[in-house]
Image (cartoon, rainbow, N blue to C red; front, side, top):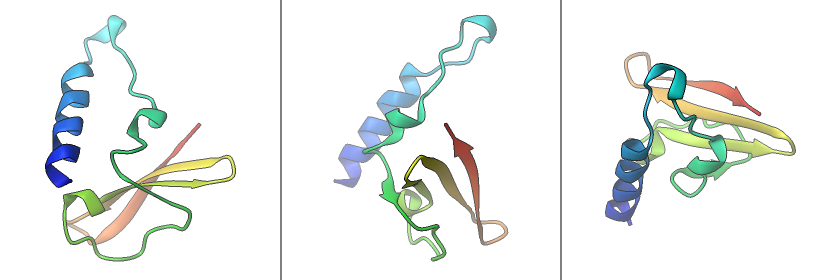
Length: 80
């Protein structure tokens, strides 16, 4: 399963690019299936890379959480 996720992430990274005016955006919906979706904010210490990124969804609230290993804390960005 981890190899399948890694290959999917690698593919999405290759498809995504930033080149100024003709950049394509990576939509939050495209991340579903790559990482675990939760309905409560993460508080645990992740054990591996795939536990370091989580999608939070409740009602109409979307957040992308990531774990900061340098400061041992979770951060998030709100999506629409």
